[in-house]
Image: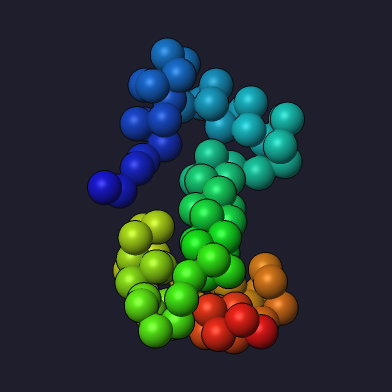
Length: 91
């Protein structure tokens, strides 16, 4: 399910503004950018551990909330300096 900043703020029992301020102050990022980073890291770990004959990059990306394969591949490449299919293939 998509997560909004308001969802995160409500779960933390703070206002949206307080949440954004805390993330900017302590992590120098936004709540949604941090969430995207965490989801990308989980997708990366799953790609590393996966059997390329059993699963596709698109399946793993979708499982972690990345529903646009091209955007996922671009974000992945920017972060890990290789294409996600290279990681899945063991490269």
